[in-house]
Length: 266
Image (cartoon, rainbow, N blue to C red; front, side, top):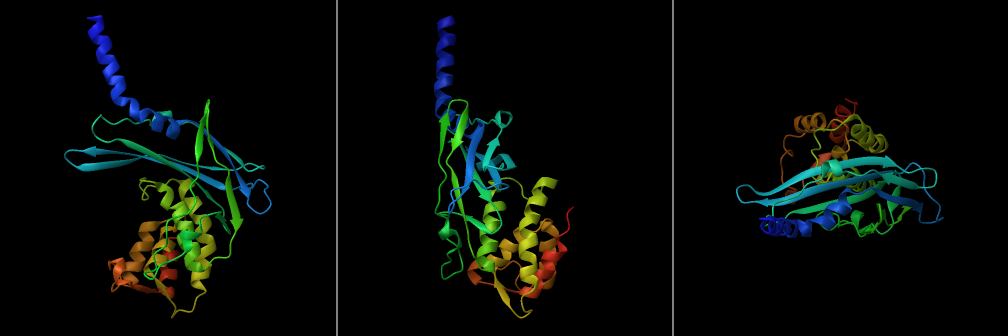
């Protein structure tokens, strides 16, 4: 009897074994540093976002993806940061469902970009950006995961480049989390980029047009997303709902009004 139970126990362990490394890396405490790529000095007050998602195949509904966590912290005076463990959000999938857990670390500071991300604001003929060029590595070192030092540098970007890059850094890093259920910290965080970009949009000549990618990125940064989308839909019903391949253009004046409609903190 004991032998049978031991065999069953070992089979269960072996079945779940492939998931363990990913779960450990995603849920252990993480520590790292953000530095200025030009001076090599640590950068204080940089927002660091850690997020993770779990995906597994479901025979009935196909792939199921769920947000496991999203944590925002800020660097200390020397550029260091620490992210606590997330074992309470641990998830495993049944063998055979191709379970995968992924996590990402993103740094954000207005006026700065991550060194190596140039492709993220280089657009093709359809106005679409490339994927970020930088990949942040991490190592399991005893009780913590050590994240590769993130190098940031000042950058002079156009309005569209700023909007897309900030949106990808902030809103894009939700990593499967429901963007319509934001707590006060999340909303305040988005507002930091909104406060920079909204005046720039509203100062444009009313006849100026913004393409679909720039408009979507700007609206993504609004604290109250639903209000902004509803206002834009009212102002430009002829463009609302068009597919990106149709390359709709939105009047800068209307984008400004939509951003203002959703700009208040809830």
